[in-house]
Length: 126
Image 1 (spheres, helix red, strand yellow):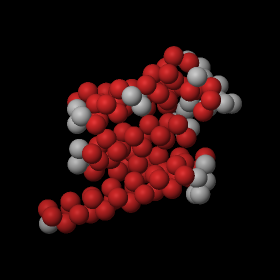
Image 2 (cartoon, helix red, strand yellow):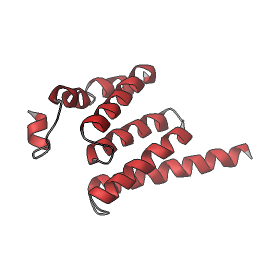
Image 3 (cartoon, helix red, strand yellow):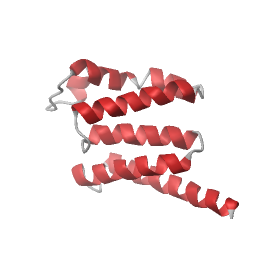
């Protein structure tokens, strides 16, 4: 199974909840691709809540859920909501995986892009 292959060595307290998190890849991606953010948002929030409960707030996979939720807000142009989620994800990845890990580097790219969007948005308002 996906979890056994990609998460070797991680003990899951509630295996079924972790499977729900990974179902995101199909159902949430479908909703997001269709622009159905109303359907997508609760699924991303549930995945984050499950990972925080099962894996802990500082786990790299919890950071992945934070990143995904931040990107969903970015897709909707809600940069102020995306920013703290992406910042937290990058902080977790830097601590747990290091600066050179691909997730950390991609997270930093996402964060820089959203920071630039926030600055551009605030520049238009002034």
